[in-house]
Length: 132
Image (cartoon, rainbow, N blue to C red):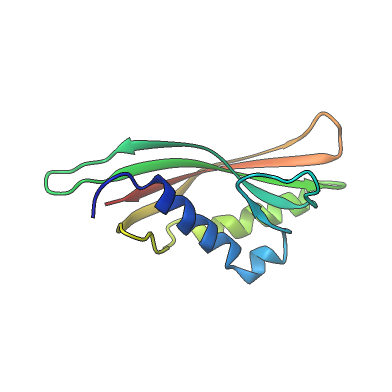
C-alpha cells in the first residue's frame, strides 16, 4: 500500500461525512464545488497539502486538509453544532481509505468568523490524515 493517496483520502472523507445522518441533519450537503443555488448550511472541501511520510519499511503520506462550514443566521450556534459533529466524526476516528491503511486522523484546529456581510458565518477545520 503506497503511492499518491490524495484522491483516495478525499473520497473516504466525503463518504464519512456525507454518510453520517446526524451531520446531514445539520447541513444540506458536502461540496467539492459549491453550486450557485447552494442552500445554507453546508460543508465544503478546502485547500489541502500532501507530504511524504515514509518510514523505514513503508511508504506513506500525510495530508493536511481544510474543511469549511457555512451557515446563515443570528449567532454562531448552528456553525458550532456542525463543527462539534465533524470533530466527533474525525478526531482520532476511523475511515476506509481504498488502497491505503489509515494510520491516524486528528483535528488540529477549528476557527470561526462572522463574514463582513454580518449574516454569513464561516468555520474552518484543519484535519491531519496519515495513510500508508
